[in-house]
Amino acid sequence: MTGTKVDLNGILVLGAGQLGMTVLRALAPRLQAAKHTLTVLIAPAVLDAPSGQDAANLAELCKLGVETIGHDLAADEQSLAGLFRRFRTIVNCTGFVVGPGTQLRITRAALAAGVKRYFPWQFGVDYDVVGRGSGQPVFDEQYEVRELLRGQSGTEWVIVSTGMFTSFLFEPAFDVVNLQRGTVHGLGSWDTRVTVTTPEDVGKLTTEILLAKPRIADQVVYVAGDTISYGHLAEVVERVTGRAFEKVEWTLGKLRADLAAAPDDVMTRYRAAFALGDGMWWEKSTTYNERQGFRTVDVEEYLRARLS
Image (cartoon, rainbow, N blue to C red):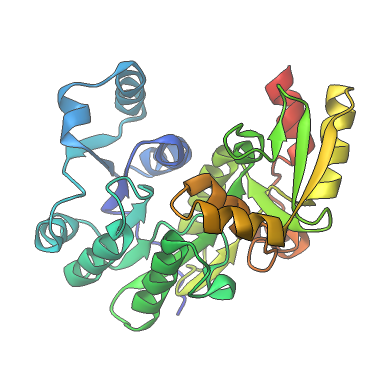
């Protein structure tokens, strides 16, 4: 369903971590200009005794004019629903901060509260294509969240599919690109593709999608900073760094064997998942940002900025 009016009153962002802060930075000035309020939910422990980064984030939120409230996301659904009833729109930027079941519990609370519009934590891969039984419990839960949302009509929902955060390609623990060791691993095959987007672009595009007219509702919106094969990724890394990298293909069979040997290792699970290909990428030319003319940062631009 779509409409022509975007209701800006009563927007609650859940979480002020890496993604939450990028959404708040993009959204706050737009709402402030329209004289509407924006609130962020933060863990009470962070408000009571913020660390260095948390303190910096809280100071920035104050400057942005964002209101803060403390509430524990591990609370029961009834408690969360009671809080959510105060807001018309919820943008969920929490991840799985309090363990498995987090996203199902938050989603059920949002539906029970009767919020008008809900952006779930689905900033990732295409869980419709991945489906159930991927070997990723987190992916299974995300698929169930979609089923919950589609099985009701009282709350409009918007899913923003972003692919992997671009920086994750260069995370040493993930071990696709290890800049220090000078290695690149192709997951599945060198032709396997992956869609990636920077958190900053996710924040900007989520804001554009939230405020779009006519209103976007009850659909999955795809965005992308880049869609790239692991083979092309290796070429980009060598070109940008000016170095030769050791390139090793990790086949799906090898990665599944690794997963069987260490089924509880998170990074082993992710490597096996992102070797599948299906559901992990979409053509950038078909994305919301490309259709609407919003510029995004690709892998090469990201890496040049990171190394500069």
